[in-house]
Length: 198
Image (tube, rainbow, N blue to C red; front, side):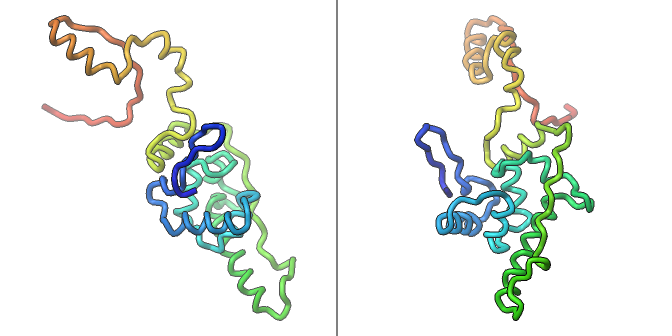
């Protein structure tokens, strides 16, 4: 859907319209196609049915937002020919779209041997920069859609922190009012660093 919705299980569904920089016309095209012909079986059927309306930028946004079932790093892993899978996929979609147009006006119709071949999805790398992927996800969606980067530190946060970041303003006010320094332990994630000289 284009907008946010809630399913029967109470889970929030993130609408495509919530992705930053994702064109409204692309959202409409995806929803129109899915409504008319049903769910997409896989990533290949998706690009085939979208008639070339999904360009590299739109595909990249969908990948980083976690819209497909593969690991996101697989899309940015080289295929056997050295090209990134995402580029091969977009190229295949373009070839498939033009082949469909050519077949409709050809005397020979559809010749299976000449049809574009689906690119092979490369294996996922053994290690991936999860934090970078999550940051991209937040950049495009405005929030973390996958597990939060600090989830793996749940034990440390539960046992070694004495306050949450949200509680700090109240602690500061009370400390200033009582003129008593307060020592607190919080958990967070550095997202930006600036060096200045004063």
